[in-house]
Each structure stands twice: as structure tokens, then as C-alpha cells.
Image 1: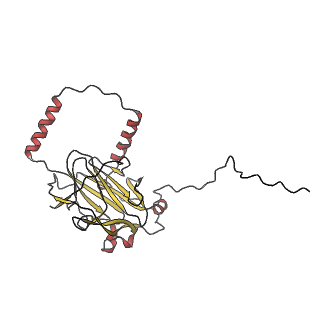
Image 2 (image 1 turned 90 degrees about the horizontal axis):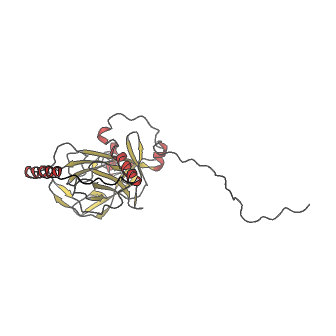
Image 3 (image 1 turned 30 degrees about the vertical axis):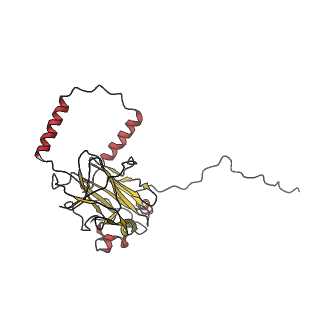
Length: 279
């Protein structure tokens, strides 16, 4: 199967990733502001608020020391082939510890059509007759099948590591490090899309048009082809992030509604007023 090899990017700024998995981190980046969109947890799902008209990218970061295949779905459509998404389809191969940003629908090895937040009827999925799954970004992650000789080598390396003398005990982690570790664990423990099988409770209908992902302007984004043999027909991990406008997520109760209130001011005055006239 044809797969695409991503160009390596710096892994800086990944502390606020939207969905931290065991194999891969998934985040949504607003390309017009440069902001990694914050996530809002609700009933086992993670949501981000998109701004209509803004371009966005999907940031993927391989958390392992081996290659992985990421099959990316946007609005239920494969971001590489344009087919109705299925985990058996083509995707992007990330090298060990590599991170990359997928910024659009793959048109060829050199170009993409930019992802942008748009009204649902203008989304690529709706315009191609597939509006049912607009509003979700998903990635199915596959590990690579290891040749027999490499597997024996890995077993031998692990045995040698076990036979090595234990390292001296390290100093206890700082409170900041413990906080970061607990934050990571909280993200890793979030249920994946494949686990969320129960029917969701009904929610208030969004008052404004729902958001989808458009088929935007062409942009240069070169990738190379490579081969990848999956270790299993089934994904080792599946991650998903749902999205809509900020107003719609507030209307549905996913984001807490801002409370407008007037705080008392300790020095409310301005300049010295004139005194009242004498009687």
C-alpha cells in the first residue's frame, strides 16, 4: 500500500497537545493565529473551538522510538485519498519521535488544499455528498511489522539491558515535574473514539451554523512515498477530536457560559468635579 513519508519538524511547543495517546499526540493548530487550540472535555470526548474562515492544521507527534502510520480522517473523509475514511486506507508515516503538521487535503506529492473552518454546507465533505460526519478529526495509528531478524535483535538488546547492573537511585522529582506527569497521565487516560460506543445524551441544538472543514487554496507541501507493513489489520490506537464554533460549544454546554458581572471598583472617580452652585 502506498503511504506518505512526512518531512520532519521541530517538536517544540507540544506541551498543550489536544489529545495525548500512548503512541501519538494529536493537536489542532489555528494557522492564522499560531495558537494550539485548547481542548474542552465533555462526556468522554475532547472538543476544540474553531474560528470561521481561519486556516488550521493537524499536528501529529510520534511518541515512540519506531515508525508509525497515521491514517488521518477529517469530517469522515481520508485526508490523503479523499475516500470515505476507513482505517485500512493510506496515511502518513512518521519516523521515530517525529512531529509534523498536516495542513490540508493531499492533492499530489507536492500540493495540498488548505484546511479551513467554514459553514457545514461549504465543507468538502458536504460538497461531495457526505455531510453525516462533519465536525470530527480522527487518526488511526498503526505500528510497523518487525522482520524476524530485527525482532531477535531487539530481544537480545532487552536481555542485555535486564542483565546490566541497576542504575543508582535518582533524586525525587520536583513538584513541577510531578504536575507535568499528572497532566500527561490525564491526557493519556482519555477514552479514544473507538471506545465511545454508547449513544450520547441529547444536547441543546446549536443556534448558529455548525462548522466543517473546507477545501481551501492550494499550497506547496512536499512529501515522499514509502512502504509500511502494518503489524496488525487493526489500529494500535485511535484518537479523535470534535470541533465547532465557540458560540455553538457554549450553546451546547460544552464550554461554560461566560458570566457577565460588574465588579466594585476601589477608585471609581476621574477628575475633580465642580462643586454645586451656591444657593
